[in-house]
Length: 131
Ligand SMILES: [Zn+2]
Ligand SMILES: [Zn+2]
Image (cartoon, rainbow, N blue to C red; front, side):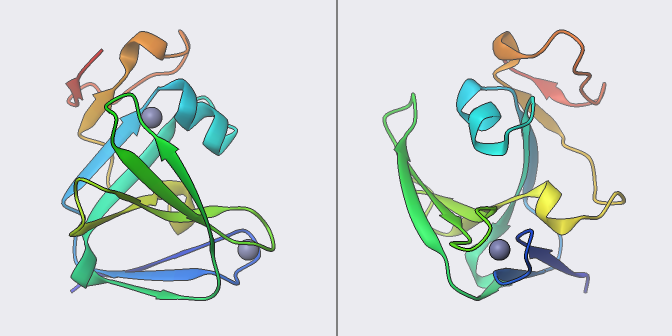
């Protein structure tokens, strides 16, 4: 089985995921832009049981447009978000794909909040598209 390792910038907070993600998405929403400091967020969702976490993290809770809460876990030393949880999906953990630092990571299959997409930002053609 594939094992992948995601870390923060400084390496203090480490997440290990076994097996393939159950969903990989690219999100163009403004909150993802502000969280990542980039023009969009890309994240992979894993079953909670497939994930192991080591290191210290600080939590930030944000209420999404849907009204649900999202809890972000970031490294208190360097600030990188390494994983987050959606309150309506307690059995899943989402991991920002950049934390894997792996250009061969599988591409997103769903693209959301395209209404907020930077005009130059391409998305994989075969992805499912949502405004
Ligand atoms: Zn760190
Ligand atoms: Zn988003």
